[in-house]
Amino acid sequence: MGRTVSAAVTRLRVSVVGGREGVAVAVQPANSVWQDVLSEINHCNKCGFCLPACPTYRLTGNEVDSPRGRIAMVEAVARGEMPIGEALAKSLDYCLGCRACETACPSGVEYIRIYEAGVRALRAVRKPRPMWLAQQMLTLVKHPRRLARMARLAERLKNLPWPTAFRPYRGMLGYRTESVSVPANPPDAAVTVLFFGGCVQSAVFPDANQAAVALLRWAGYQVVTPVGQTCCGALHWHNGEESQALELAKQNIVAFERTPDAWIVNTAGGCGAMLSEYGKIFADDAAWSARAAAFSGRVRDWTTLLRQSPRPLTFRGAGERVTLQNSCHLVNVEKAGADPVWLLQQVTGDDFRPMPGQDRCCGSAGIYNLEHPDWSVAILDRKMEEVEGLEVDRIVAVNPGCQLQMQWGVARHDSRQAVEHLARYLYRAHQRARQAGGDGHG
Ligand code: SF4
Ligand code: SF4
Image (cartoon, rainbow, N blue to C red; front, side):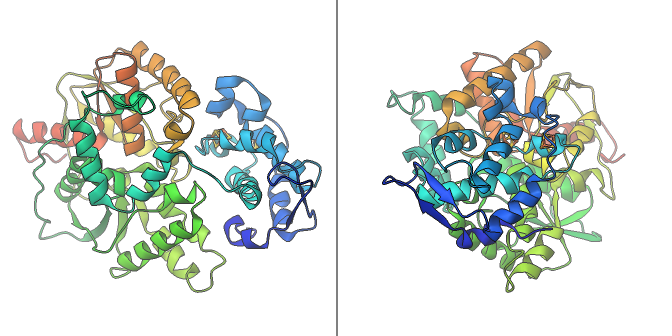
């Protein structure tokens, strides 16, 4: 493994050509950072197998919006053959960061390292200016109580006239939390799991977290929620606020290493991917690398542990047709996308109808839907066409951003599907199985 791009950013050497920053920048090709990136790029044989997996390429059909095109641009910049300018900026800005290209690539190219090198080269000459709403989100996620209050306020104001700029996002609202009864820890539990709440999940969909804790306890785990945990830092990391992301990550590492031998679980695929990559992010930091690697080595999605539980649960549906919008980071980074699918297949009495592109990004992608609503909506509309073809009653998601996005899709298309997190759906299905007799275990 080469050096991580993140740690090397301070050593990036660029010089501005001409008078305007960010317009044309020559790069020192001998720079060791670029040598690392070029060695990763050398694994790409330009075969194009990743193109059909890429949502932005599928949308436009343009090479510059494909993984291969983006890799070629970063390569040209790294070799000093192309300036760091608007062409590179537009191509990389519109990448979702979904990493479907990595899963599709037969050569094992780590696209994200190449992409991040390009983004950091851009940031060295062009201070990112996130739109106002996106900037508010980056601040709010560090203050979950404030975020929860804002979410409740937005719900209350939903039917009042909204400023034109915010009106399109009104479709994301309308979620109703359900009452969840969380049992005590089983007295005979042999395995302890530490629960990571996640900022958006805890603030906007608290019942999904409660449902997951209940299911894990019924399945025989002792579930503990460590104090001192905070936002995973993913939104900051992917939006140019690296130092804030690193501070948040350190706070989480400290909070969870007080119980060093327990799994760390969460219900948000996007958070899980970030938590599982703390080890890579701190790889060059002598003080934190071992602690971060130990932390990441313990991260699992809650569905993985539920699937492997010592006391498997039974689930009974309500005669509905159900589909899944998977989390691209759960699929492409944590490589655990099969676990939600397996759990849905265990529900008797419901008809699970897999969506053709269930693993493909829905266009939410962190705050991509706030920054690029035009492309995000175009990707979402295609997704909704797939949903409508299935004639389902319910869409389940495994990440809060995907859940909000699918709620938006249902509202935009004036559709009738209910949207909720998989944990809440399975909680009700397990309650039904218990009420039908037996103890709810298989
Ligand atoms: S990234 Fe992988 S799949 Fe895509 S063109 Fe390169 S080698 Fe082929
Ligand atoms: S991360 Fe996603 S959007 Fe970006 S190039 Fe890869 S597949 Fe395409």
